[in-house]
Image (tube, rainbow, N blue to C red; front, side, top):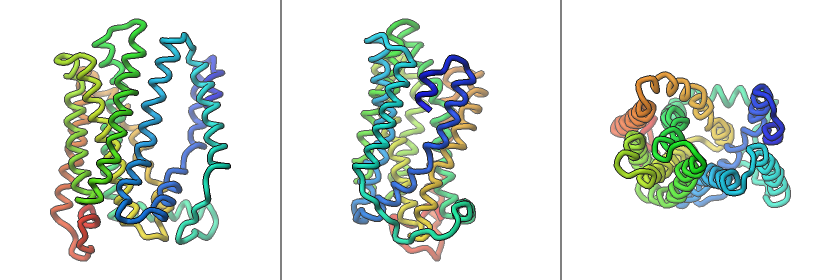
Length: 325
């Protein structure tokens, strides 16, 4: 996919290359299930938060390096994608020679298509999993509808010119990296006080950050905008970590790998719906996607709180397990 992007000369070349992303997906659940099988229960939140931070760290370091290569060294976009292709090959070599196989407690048996269909059916028929997926989808939806307009907000501060790429890299890259590095501490806190209280707090903080983001340039310029981006990144990483934690303990071992493999279904749906909603509401002003996104996260926090206040009578009374069923 990266090589196709590097060689692209027409828009349809880019479209075909992006379609190949689907062949890269589907491994997150396997990694999460492997982590769940080898991690002590009392440290699960911390370890999964570290794992969850790895993605945002990559998203943060990538734009930063790209900004340096483009603005500082005059690289082309094609060159940046070519480097990404080399790094992807390096990742494959690392998995092949630098990792050890972790088998699940219950190894799925049967045809692949039958197992895949059963996994989807199991997720859609489980009220607990549906509730967690819904909250996860709301969080991703809020982020996806506002993320495309972050560079536009940066442009309102620094204007167009040679410094624009570096400004975007600061807000979308360096700030996101700092925020992601805070999530392991939040994961450790979740191990102590419970995952749902931390999830509610992260949703509220994320909502506040999204609402404040388009206002930050008016009062503190690029520095305040970057600070808000740090808080937002920490909140989003924490939301992901808490969702992974809840699924890893609430789903039985027999269905854990299958369910966790589908954990990013809400992301894929939000990736389609979010930008479409953002494109519609931005007609009302640049701040509209951030305001609607913040309202979505706030609604998610309210939903988690209300379900936490009304646990089902037949659910085990554990501070980590009661709430979203």
